Image 1 (cartoon, one colour):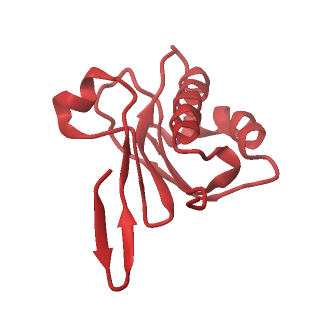
Image 2 (cartoon, one colour; image 1 turned 135 degrees about the vertical axis):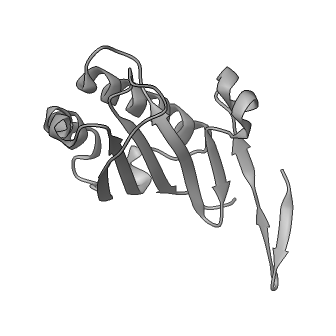
Image 3 (cartoon, rainbow, N blue to C red; image 1 turned 180 degrees about the horizontal axis):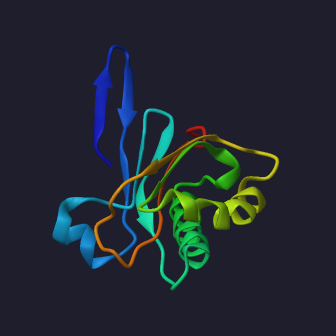
Amino acid sequence: MPAFLFGTETMTIKRIHSGSPFEAKIGYCRAVVAGGFVHVAGTVGQGDTVAEQCQSALDVIAGALDKAGASMADVVRVTYYLPDRHEFEACYDILASTFGDNPPAATMIECGLIDPKYRIEIEVTALAPAAS
């Protein structure tokens, strides 16, 4: 892991890859642990409906957080991107179930996604586990 000196502290950066072929093709990784946070890249899910894609994306995000030593309970910020804001309501129960007692600050943005088949993209920032 690369380490950088900031003032008198050294900050280590850990990159987490999911194995997706798009990571190498586009030049990104699923998550980066840096500065006390886990930054998870925008994640789309699989399925035909927005609800199926939402759950699938959250599962991928949970896996990335797990590799970083964190969990959904550590998420402090989430951004939802949807091409049709009217579909967001179909995700409410899934999101409430996922974040429950630990709701993060959240934003929903209506925008175009990389492929019309995608109905939602989710990006999160979580607290990183304390270094041991």
